Image (cartoon, rainbow, N blue to C red; front, top):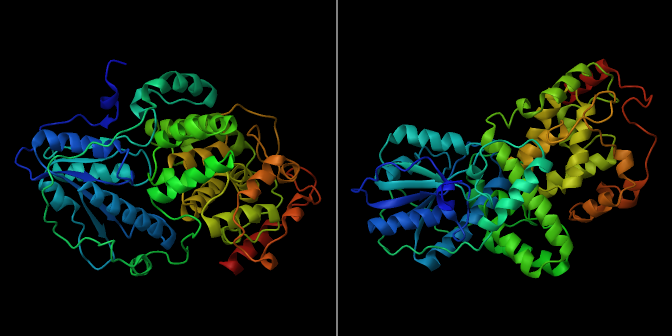
Length: 487
């Protein structure tokens, strides 16, 4: 590559900076941390060159898809942490909360006063559209520059999409020494206050529960006490991970919301982690997470069924008419009231904890393929459940995990009913695997014993209900009637 490392994180060439602007605006969208933040560093560098202050602005919409108490609360907790850190740094940070009162977002008015707008580059969910919309409104002045802080290796380092971890791994590990290093924070030299055109949330006095309840969002999805948003909580969880020697971090919600950088996790683990922890993080945090972002960066269709390889779509379509062991309406799946206790345990983890260990998530997703009428419906169900309940949903990693369910990243397997050559995972076979015990051990005991089966029961395999096993499929008319009655 002929471009330097800093340039690879810049998405959209920098045009002429409006010298008459009052400040450099950092519009924080997804990198919700004050330190080890490439976008903030870029804004601070440009501001120092101009002799202007940096103004950090963050807004929280009420109308983003799947907006809920759970997601709002985590973001507001993160924002309270950010406000404290920027106060300590002497940097002005303002937060706008959309409560549906008719007050317009101040983003555009702030941007028009800026010499330059810097924001986070994030290749999925609503972020690309939001950034494109602001550029459309502003035109060429001031320029809007997106900075990639989400991965260790800049997404622009690779000029194509990789289709397997096997192909991606050596290329990533080759580039790793050039990019895995501490990320020092650049201090802005000018500390001049900016008058915002709205009343920012004062997190020193704010009641977060009251703020959440005042927003017109989905109040049926509650916050998760086990996951408190913010960089401090992320670092505490990282410290516990290193102390216990466990192979899994539970940091995916914090990575999704940008509370902690992957650089910090990897470097801290290299210093204080076990061999097994380093091996696990190299595979999960580096190879699979960065591969997922590579797909999202290069494939605009990564959130749709078009991300599924053509061979897998053809196989699933060919077997669409195969009898299903049972068909569950969305309501039954969402409430975790199927006849399969192990699957319900996985779904309850989403309902109550907003988190599901990877092994459970694979079993959870593969089962839905045989419980819905076709793979298109299964895809929609999994995206909905994942994005509504998972704190780490709406993320390149979770979209790639769902795509994996349908054949992404691997070769054809043995042919089976319903799945064709798409890899099948059996809930019954999983009961015999130590990976399941390990995954269940990561779940918090949030429900009373009377409302969930004992863990031992999950390992006692009932009569085989695998597709093609001879179990009589549920009558489709009865299923449709059940759907009507419960709808």
